[in-house]
Length: 154
Image (cartoon, rainbow, N blue to C red; front, side):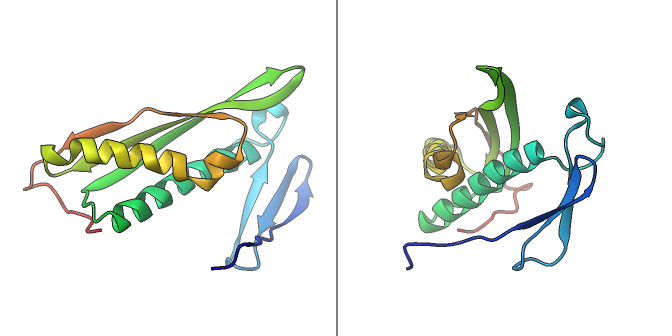
């Protein structure tokens, strides 16, 4: 495997405090604006949303990969994420990002293993390792009835 990977993104201004971002590797583009609290347009993706989305999507794909490699079957994984922006030394900065995974499994015997894999995914997520904000994991593991379960085979 290569030891260096490059990801190219292009952004262009389309309006005051707003723009569009695109990648040559992905069809379409994403319109964005500064958040309303920074005088941007409401109802649009913001750089702040995209920052938190990058972290939570990395976490989900990292967990999925670890579960697959570990032959760990789970019913579902949904993760709520919340980034906390604060003024630090006179400048805005993300200081914490909460990841709240909700992992559903079929068997109680898999609970501790599921928790270990959730924690391993947080430590293994390259976006989490690349940022200065503290990542806080608040997991929930629920055992669901086999009648309800549609297992994601690893």
